[in-house]
Image (cartoon, rainbow, N blue to C red):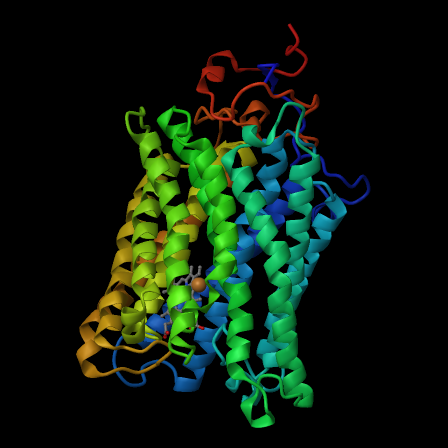
Length: 553
Ligand code: HEM
Ligand SMILES: [Cu+2]
């Protein structure tokens, strides 16, 4: 930055909206400000996340003993399906881009908003509309869907539950995701501040940019695939259903051509947040900036080539199996590059163990377990034993929840003071990271062992020899519930009664820390001119925060 004196006392985006006439809740629902839209996503997504958690805890209660305990088998089927649909389509896919991408992409680029602010608001409405349809599918005749979140054929064509409504909801949510991606790609191409070359962009921007391409290119594939399922249900066209001459394996291919890249939509922006937090709390420029930026693009690209590792047991040719297994190992490389560079950044850094950093530590441990067990599933011999068992359930919770979920919380704790201008209880937040880590492993580690022993996934009952491990896991779900309630409690009480935060409590140097907290409506009243590398901490010495009007002295 050229101007290192920063005005702090201005009206913030929380006090003034983009709409002159609308007030109250409407000034939010009609706002085209990227920051307000980010917050609306945050509120909606948190509500769905918590609903998903409650469903998870209910499943764990059912599994506390063999046989029926609190629900029948069909209810269990609908609950694991809803849990999966909510967590995947309403929480973890939109979560990072829609909340933190929206709020921080323009700030980190030195822009006043995203490229298409109205389209951005439209994406949010589509999201709400899709979510509302999921709700509708629960209550109309036919009942909640019971296919699992993967909608596998032929069952999804034959069951009488409301598959079509749920699928149309997923279709609409997909549209919302595509439009957000379009918006972000254009924003990165067109809205960078003067001097912000591609290799001066913060790594969260790089990660969100790579993600946006996946959102644009991959999402239409699932859109078409699931619409074909609806056509199959309504008119019996016979594309997937074998009894009508269709091919169920074709569905699996088309489903995973989207849904594997989608796991990178979930994880890439989270990795971007890690690359922000680690330099800030180690007071040290990131090690291997270009390697990290390029590995995001590499993950986005190679991520398209591995989809059939979900189908090793579906009867593909041995050649296909070997190729997809090989490519799966290949995609682990760019992820490993990131992890090595993060560790190298910490090495000899002056590490400050503040809550966001502790959550990142949580992430690195859990995500590494998730990633390594992914290799176990990517190897043909072991996958045949472990396919569709609890090992898979453990693996994907470690990557999605221990990975992206933990970083969702890390990002909240890191940027909360910027978003709200308030500070939360840091002791509680640090304790919370530890509690989450412990709860997480009690809840999910037993599932690896259960899977190895042969416990299949999506079953509401089990053999008596699995009881001990199932009970341990259920106890873990209670501690997890407490940990999540504590996060919500800590942040909500900070929103209402928190102490005012300094503008830059952690000593960050990317552009969002060069403005007031909470940011003013148009972010920068003078568009910044970027001269420094994104993680050049020598700037800290010259960054001064003064009341508005005095910044030019
Ligand atoms: C307190 C938190 C959570 C608990 C207790 C929990 C528990 C469970 C359980 C018991 C299952 C079903 C296992 C089976 O019978 O096959 C399951 C499935 C699943 N969970 Fe979670 N989970 C939690 C959080 C999450 C999160 C945060 C995500 C995503 C980010 C997630 C994504 C999924 C998915 C995709 C499935 C598969 C559903 C299907 O088979 O169609 N869960 N979870
Ligand atoms: Cu995959």
